[in-house]
Image 1 (cartoon, rainbow, N blue to C red):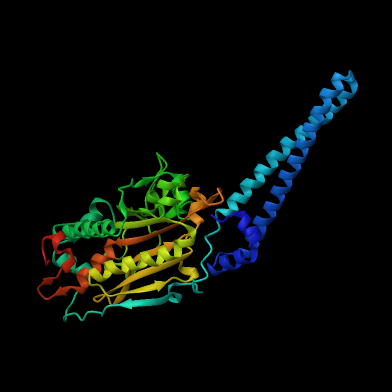
Image 2 (image 1 turned 45 degrees about the vertical axis):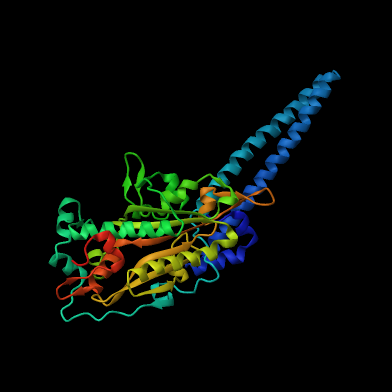
Length: 423
């Protein structure tokens, strides 16, 4: 969440940043927030003045009573009571203004980094790096939604019967491939210094608010209404919330965690011909990396995380490209995001498999995640995360890019995990 002091001191920067993210009516809403802040601070000042004067009068009452000036004391007492009542009314006014200001601030997305390119849609994202060659497939090569039927490794019809669309069953070597990828990603993360956690897949509202999913993505999350819990859209949420209301010892930085979880997304309104098969699911598996870092080092860390994810794709022998997202295509909470996309030879299109983002202090402000600086004061930390990796489209690309006329070859790096080399 943006801090009102920052907005007050950097009004034009805030407006331009919100406009870069195509936040509607940015200038008007910033002015509204500042007006409420001015009123709130004025009410607070009036309250403080009234209380100070009331306290002074209270001292006079004691002196007057001691001197036997009872009538004068009673008169001052009434004046003090009037001021006390005014102060109480001003407390309520300041509280109401504080709540109105808060309700506006929570709707403001994070401001984009200066590195973020201008643009409104995914078509405006900038390719910053490419790696690998697009494979040439044999005649009659199939998209993954036909391959999974041919080799009976993933069953969408059975998932539709048991649950609904977007909840597939993984079977036989399909299930083993899923497990192999999860274990491979976790092992690689451990080698890179990440500490593994297995978090809950249900969160409360405070956790959803802390990382910015609530209220922004309320309608996109599955809600267990009886207990008021939400199914997680990504392991980022519970892992980052481990540090909610924590003052971190600066010597512990960077904090590096990794976790595997199933993820759940309603994806309302996102279905169409371009999201067939594994391209978009309601439930999918993902390994997530999360870092808590000092503000001075977070962008260096973001580059390290990007290179780490690229290394995973290279070990899987998948051709990929790296995109720097434009302002209009970024998430609500991100200050800078890189997307990694793999090429699907059978579909002849790029598929997003990872997003790596720096949220700067936006999540930390919501989480009250801080450290003590050399000045002995508390300061907000920076949070970062990345998919390392999301499985469905990785599986789709592996199946499509490695298909031959007599089966599907498994990337060599996965052989120790799958215990087979071919489907």
